[in-house]
Structure formats: C-alpha cells, structure tokens
Length: 569
Image (cartoon, rainbow, N blue to C red):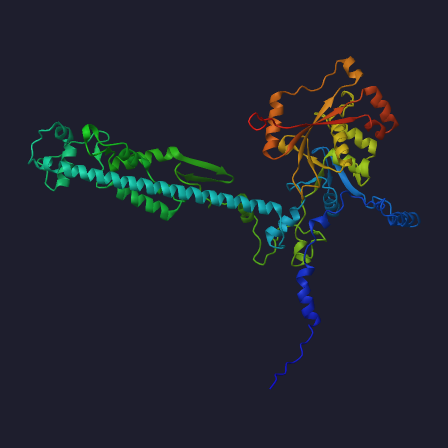
C-alpha cells in the first residue's frame, strides 16, 4: 500500500523574515564604505573605444543628459571646522563630518584614536553595548597573547633548567656517597693509611671526621667533647642533614606548585653552584657551605636590597622577586585597570555618573536600545593638519574654517597667512616679527601635499617613522604605506645664488638612519626637492592669486634605496 505524503506547506512570512534576518544585518564591505576617494562626487563621461563605434553614441547620450539635466553642484556638503592655535590644527567636532572626511579620502585622525576616529565605537564595545571589530581592541588582545606565550616559554625554560640541576645534584650525591663508602675502612681504623692517595683522602677537620664516622655507623672518639665552633663556611651538606638532591627537589616542586607569583620560594642556586664546582680541598668528598641559621640570617639581610617598590598614586605597591623567576602574566594591564576604575552596572548599562549625550545615528541599530547609547558622550574630535585643512578649503571647497575666539569664518587668504605664521616656532604673529618668506614650512609641505593628492596618492603625516609624509596607494584601511617622503627646499634660482642662500646640509648619518628605519618597515625613502621661487616673483604672483603663487613651486622626486655590499654585489 502506497504511503500518502501530505503536501509541503510554503514558509510563512515570519519564517521568511527570520531566515533573511542574518543577511540583513551584514555590514557593507570596506570597498563600499570607502568608495569615494574625495568628499565630492564627479560625473565623468563614459570611455570611448575606437574599435567600437557604438561607444560614441554612449558618450553623446551621457553628455546630452548632463547638459539638459545637470547634476547638483559639488561639493554638496560643506563641513565645519575650528582653528586651534594650541594644537596648530583644525578641529572637526560634528560626528557626520568626522565620518565623511575619514571615509572619503582619509583626512585627519581621531584625537583619542590611533588613526580612525572610533573612540565612541570602542567605548560601546568595552561596555558591552555593541559587538563589533575594533582595531585597537584587537591590538591589545594580540599583545596579551604574545605576553602569555612569552611567559609560557620562559616557564618551560625554567622548568628544564630545574630538571637539569636536579639530575646533576643527584649524580653529585651518588659520587659523594661512593667516596664515603671508600673512606669507611679508614674511618673505622681497621686499615692504616699507607698509600699517598689514602693520606690525601683523610678528613682534614674534626667536623669532616665526625661526619664520616656518623655515615659509617660508629660514634666518634670525642663524642662527649663539644666540637669547636666552625669559622665561616665549614659545615658540609651532609652535616646539615639535607642532601642536595632532596633539597633541590623540594624547592623545585614547591616552585612549580606555587607558580611564578611566589618569588620567595624560588630556586636558590648558590648551594648548587657550590656543589657543582668540585669537591673539598685536598680531595675531600664534602663541600662546605653556610650553616642553616647563618644562611637564613644572611638571606633575610640580603632580601631588602633586592626589594623594589613601584609607586602608583595614591598608594604604594611593593614586590620582591628574584632574577631567575619568569615574567608573570597575572599583573593587570592598563585596560583592565581602567575597566576596574570605571565599572559598569550588572545590566550592561553604564554608570550613573556618565553625562548623557546623543550617539551616532548610523550605529544606533547595532546597540540594544537607543536610550543606552545616549548615555555615552563622544569626547573625540577629528584633527586636521594645516595642509589637509587648506587642501579641503582651497582645493575642494569642502571645508569651512572659523576662528575659535570670534566664531567668524576665515577667508582663504586669511587661512594662508595664519598657517604660514604658525609654521614657524615661535609663531610670527606680532608686528615686530620678521616677514614671511616663500620658503616657510607650510608652503613647502603644502606644495608637496597638493602635488601627490592631485596624482591620486593618499599622503598622511609620517612622524611615526621619522619622515615628513607617508604615501598610501588607496588608504591605511586597504594597505600599508609604500613610500616615506622627506621634504628638502632647493634654492636653485639665480636670485638665491646672488644672495648666497644655501639649502639645509644633510649628513650621511642622517640619510643612513632614515633609510635604515624605513627599510625595517618595508618602505622606500623618497627625497622630495622643492624649488623655492625668489621673494619678489612670489609676492607679485601672490597678489594675482594663490593659484599663481603655487604654480611657481617645482617638485622633484629622488628615490633612495639601501645599498648592501653583500646583497648587491
């Protein structure tokens, strides 16, 4: 009899929505986030292919469409910024402008972040309000893993050293017992020492003789007489009643059981070194060391000299350690201390002392609720260098800079003058200060910045690697910088030669240091020479316009590579 199967029902709308929920929460890729290379939109015409005549009609249709229906004027959004004399930079505090300037050209850096302004996102992840990938948190985790791996490697090395010392101590103890067995007939007095070797092997002191007789099983002849007090290091390991192997095994097992956090029970290497250096004088089978009471007193006397105190405010934390101990990973890190100082409530919400503020609208859906996100105040702003700010104002028109005191917007000429004044140290802002010249730091660096930006590169500050600028192909999110730039002024005009003006003299040590640092991080050094125009011609061109003045600067690049006699032979 055939089995009748009921028809399968189509999934309902709730099941379909639940199945599509994970795909709906998927974040866009970095190629979609950083699709625009500049904070403006362009509308280029299609490409013309000579072997395809139909592409000409495509170009004509696109051109006619832009003529009869022109696109909106760009830039559509002008971002606000404030000039700060204290930091010599332009601050952008609007959250939407911060994200736009970073995602559309990688301009500026976060004041509380390494590069990308993601302090608010990092704070949400720390408080458990959002589950996202943050580069700074991943860096801290990798550092903790490396520290744990180094500690584990050091612990294994210390354990191997202890095992080796224990085995050597056992072998030395066996050799000592064998020599004691050879001395047993001499200790009992049954055989007279007639051989020179037997005479040299006889005990030299009463203490060694009593120890030999005690091991041999017979009481010493002067048992009723009190032995003399030893001077210095005269009591042997056997007299103390503690064999080297048993003592070393006890200390090793205790150290391994307690771990690296108990430094006072660490292995004492002095008795072992005294045991491994050889036997006693004149062929004696015993090695003298300090008595137990003397050794304990000397250890207590020496321990304060090795005690180190690390002072933290408002209390003092002290620790005593030995140099043979491996590093301990149990010490709290700075991130853990900060989390302990600012605990959150059990329900995942921040403490009540936080000042409420409005979070980012784009990230509000990632958190549990909007009310929890509003408790976090975004304390970060975007910092723009004078070159970046002037390029956004003068080159693209996407930034409006205002004065911090008056709040009035600054014109392009005012911004140029102010940036040139603050490129000197101290700034030349007074009436008695020297006049500004065409070779000031801002004009030289802006000419280089504008030159490489116009060629499609992404220049960013390179003080981290000891250079003026770093060149990225697409940006720090996609790849590492490939080149490091050093800006050098060049006074090649005849007017400068008549005045006797010479460029900065760089030494070979400076060049080798720069090349060595960049070669270790897989970057190439590029010397950028900027031909400085003479002041009369520059002032005349500046009166005609900023564009005419910047046209007088010429850029020349020279790549420098490290030459090695072994590799390049």
